[in-house]
Amino acid sequence: MAHLDRLADLFPDVPRSVLLKADLLRHGARLDTPEAGSRHYHHHDARGQKAGVDPRAHLQGSVQLPGGVHAFITHNANSPYALRSASSGLELTVATEDEGREEIVTAIDPGPRFAWTSARTSRGTPLATLFTPSLGGACGPVAVFLLRHCEFAVAGEECRFCSWVRMGKSVEMRPDVDEMREAFTAITAEQRSVGYLAFSGGSLFNRTKEADAFLDYMRAAREIGARLPATVAAIQALDRADSIRLRDAGFDYVCYSMEVWHERAWPEVLPGKSRSLGRARWMECLQEAVDVFGPGRVLCNFVAGVETAVPDLFRSDAEAAESTLEGMRWCDEHGIYPKYAAWIVSGGARYGDRAAPSLDYLVRVMTGRQALYAESSLPVPETDCQRCLTQSFEADLAVLDPLKYARGQAALHAWHTCHPRAHVNQEP
Ligand code: SF4
Image 1: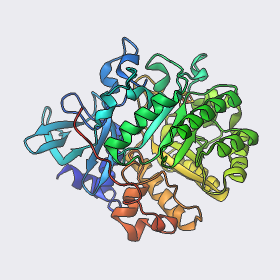
Image 2: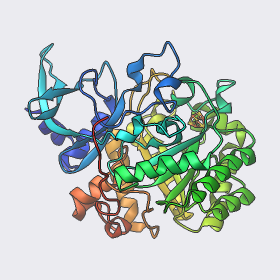
Image 3: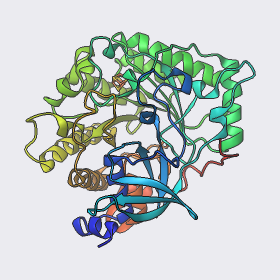
Image 4: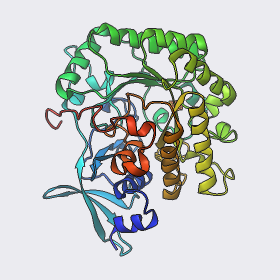
């Protein structure tokens, strides 16, 4: 039986491309030979990488599967999947039980690789140190990593799924309006579409100081004079006064991610966030932010599956998935838009040696999240489309099986057209 048939046999209610994407997120793929889409660096550019770390750990990118499904994949030398060059393009293969043999799963398209990521400004600054393609989105979303340091890592308190803090050197950059203008002009000239603009970075125990950096960068981004796409600040949960400062600076959305829901998972998975303000205060800040930004403008991400790696916390996949869905329901009831990203087990993270979440778990979370749309009044944020949701399945399910999965708010969002496909000038 072919690989996709085997997956479909296990989960007949879920489109095959979605199952394949979920399995690829869990396992990654061997990317040694051909490359997927945009190459991402944990620390912003090739020069910033820490010596001694296997450089293949930085091979990440996106691919397009049949049905317009975009998946983010990371290199994993032990994955059963591999990307292979074929005369017609790229193929995805999977190892068979017959040792040393591979079966072709499907032809795939590589995600976009933008020429600007190799270009420099007139002062010689690599554009990729100013902006980064975000998660391989084919609508060309970009991110600004403004705080290149996370205080949680100093005493080993980093989030257990995070590989970012241990992979490279930290350099804090001050925003330079001229350089940002030049870079953003080059990006928009090539891509002609920038799906969203995310501001993100490491955390500080002084959250007001952390917010200061976001304000500096947003001011600089506004000063470049370009029309910005939807903007989001992915930052620790802020007190009301600081949320007001972000709103007044012009952020469209804030994302105060709880990452895991269960009370006992918090200190295990998020020691830094637990010491910084703790789960209860985080939840209060989320609610205060809804007062400031309005319902649906405050986002909260869950790293779906990392809670299954906490020893002795859940007895089954069903219990773990139900916990995360409970968190999503709490968010929805309080005007907070719940997002999720399938946990990718990354080398360099504290949990880099733990087992990936099962396919059963991911199917439970994805279908449970779709069901929640039917009860929700929160619109899907402008930051989300099928081309940029490379680590979750909301858009794929809604587009591929609307009768089952595009209910309520999920039926009202233009998942496939709200961000146009980005153009690529040339392969870098
Ligand atoms: S806050 Fe957590 S996820 Fe973010 S950089 Fe620090 S350790 Fe990594």
